[in-house]
View 1 (cartoon, rainbow, N blue to C red):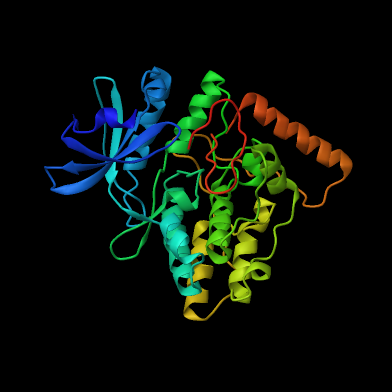
View 2: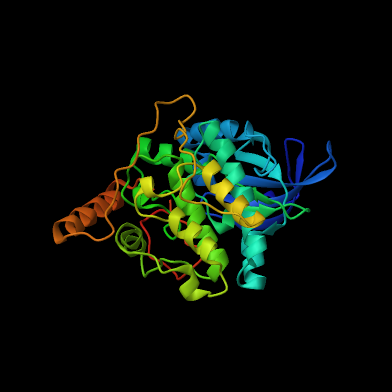
Amino acid sequence: MPDRHLGRTLGRFRIDSVVGSGGFAWVYKGYDPELDIPVAVKVLKPHFAGDETFESRFRQEASVAAKLRHPNIIRILAVGRQAEAVYFVMDYLPHGLVDRLRVMGTLPEPMLLRTGIDIANALAFAHREGVIHRDIKADNIMFDAHGNAIVADFGIARAVSGYVKQTGTNMVVGTPQYFSPEQARGLHLDGRADLYSLGITLFRCATGTLPYDGEDWYEIARQHVEDAPPSPRSLNPGISVEMNRIILKCIAKEADHRFATAEALQEALANLSSGKLDITGERTLEIPRIAGRAPLRAVKPVAVRSSRRRVAAIGASLILIAVSALTAISLRPGKNVSAPPETFD
C-alpha cells in the first residue's frame, strides 16, 4: 500500500503525502530539509524493489538521466535504497500538461508553440547526449512556476526495456497511444521515435483528443503502423495550416519523412512562433547515438497503404511483440484497454 511510507524518512528526504501510483512505483510529495524545498519521491513497488536485475538497471539509467542538466528536463536529486525501499528523488512540480488539458480542453496555439519548443529543446539536448526518452506523452510533461515545460522520466523506459529483454518478462514498454510505428513493431529506435511521440502529444494538445485509440493495445499498435492520422484541422479548424503541417510531419509513418532531429523541429516551431516558417528545408543533422553503446540504426520505413501480404506481416510482428513483450503499457489517457499480463507506466 502506498501509505506504508508516509511519515518515513528516506535518506534525508521526508515522505509527506501520496501523489499517485504507476505500474512500478508510488509517487510521493516529500521535503528536503537540506535545501528547504519540496521534492517528488518515487519508490519502487516491492515486486520491483526485490528484483536485483531491475534495481541495477533502474539505478544505472537513473544515473544517466541525472547527468542531463537542462532547464527543460526535470532534475533528479538522489537515487538510493533504504532497507526494502528503492527510491529516486526529483524536483516537485505540481502542475502538468494533463492538468492544463483537463481544464482547458485544448491549448491556444501560442501556448502550444511554447510548450512544443520547450519539449523539443529538452529532446535535442538529450539526444546529443545519446539518450532517447522512449515514452514522451502528456503525462510526462510538467510545468515550472514560470510556465516552462519540463520533461520528466528520462531513463525510466530504457531501464524497463532492458529488464524486459533480459528477463523475458511479458510487458510492453511505452504508451500505446503515443508510441511510434517502429516501437509498435519492436524495431530499433533513434531520436525520431521521440519526435513521433511528441507529435502525438502536440496533436492531443491541439485537438483535445488522440489520433489513435482502440479496445486493446494490439489494435492501437496496428493503427500506428497502418492507419493514416486525421488532420488536426479537421478536428479543430482554429489550428493554423502551418501548425497542422508540423504535427503531421512529426507523426509520419516513415521515420525518414519526419523532422530529421529535434533541433529541426524546434526551429520550425520557433519560426512559426515568430511569423516565418519553412518546414521542408531544415538542415539534416546526424541521428543521435545511445551513450556508451553502438550507433542506433535507422528504422525501416513502413508503408501507410499496404498489400494484404504486408498487413499479414505487420500483424505477425505485432503478435511477436505480444509474445516477447518488448514494450510497458501506460493506459492514460483513453478507454480502459486490455493489456498483457504485467503492465506499468
